[in-house]
Image 1 (spheres, rainbow, N blue to C red):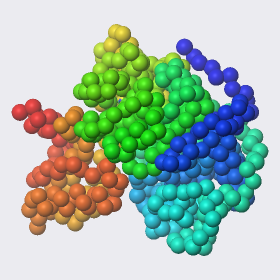
Image 2 (image 1 turned 180 degrees about the vertical axis):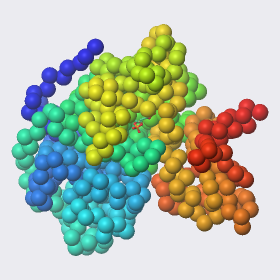
Image 3 (image 1 turned 90 degrees about the horizontal axis):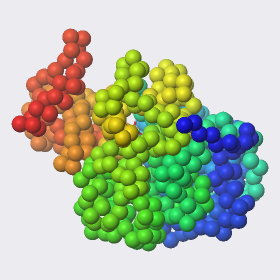
Image 4 (image 1 turned 135 degrees about the vertical axis):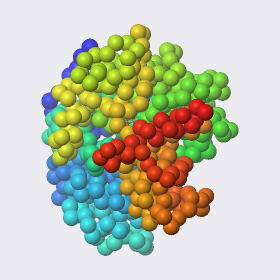
Length: 537
Ligand code: 3UK
């Protein structure tokens, strides 16, 4: 069933998600709760307008990229929509990444401006000299430190700001809170997210002005039944496609309230935030649900919980229901589709399944020759729907492999039963989802091989005690080195020191040699089989 939004040709997402709320009389409604601070839609609008004006005064023009390296605070929607309203294109960067990743993102996107939370600035310092497109760095929370910020704080001693860097609060204070909306159309570029693949560099995924409205009015309205009186809390961060919907454009679509947690979402922090701000909708990844089940805590006032990023183990679903009398809706989404397109429904949950197609989307499972497979047969999951990204920036080959006309290839292996329930059956590449976030085995291998004692290595996914995937490394050591617990710890620390933390191998197996093809390629599938046989024995 095709689904039409009927958006006017002239359309800007910031007008829809922010200005419209003020126009419709919700100016005094609380839009954002963050720690002990609260911000109305009028506050967010003023900050957005000031930031948009600031960008224009810095010379940023329509279609130019502005990178956001920000914690989850009230600054996020202001910077995100401020850029969009000025016609610029925000690029949401993953704060867990490391210096080398940021060098790639900033140069690939040719961002002219970077907005960065003070505690994350140290990741940028080492690459300052190798960012030819970046002209301005705007630092948030410099005055207070630790990610805390009060809007328009009085200026005090500047500590680590470079002379050329700008202070976010000062910049906002210096600009008008009125801003004309850039003359974008509904199909203009709106925002980017980076998506990683098993080989090659991350792909700048270009989303259009209408995409967020589409996702909000399909999955948001039709599955979650989001309403003005809802309070949204996403433990998944705003820089993920998942968190961006949960924490920004779902609540703003219906004039609701969003709760932000700037810190790492530990079970303690998450329970404390729920106690303090009483969300009605809670969003997490399976790993977090597992951790929360291990800890004391309550979920008062929550009406529905959502899980995405990787398949939710049925055991979590059952234990959660028994403890909180709450459902967890598992659904599959992707950066390319902006949000969830196959999902379970409230009161209609099939444990172990990703659920049924969301209204407004179509899904197919096909074999190698693109023919639909029969129910129960595994194939590749294709999806169609108007929140799909237009293309990958400067990656024509990858774009045409993934965006096949109206259909988008998810790269996931799925099967569908006779009732229309979709079941996840792995990936068609070697990519791993760890805590809901992509890990490329190639990247971990490339890092390990840098270690002087590693001769060869291969990384695959292995299941932990809860059936969730974590990286496992098979390592052949150089002739001078003997396997030991000490070497194992050293190799883990080595990976932790240069890649994002969640990527390090949780287990290391030392081998005399690795299975290889005639052409010398490591056979990861043989290692997977080996592991399976050992676990079965
Ligand atoms: C996998 C799942 C099984 C699947 C995302 C909700 O995860 C999101 O986006 P990413 O681009 O990854 C997409 C890939 O992750 N996956 C996601 N959810 C599930 N596998 N069950 C699930 N429930 O391989 C998919 O192709 O990081 C999730 C909303 C927006 C998102 N971007």
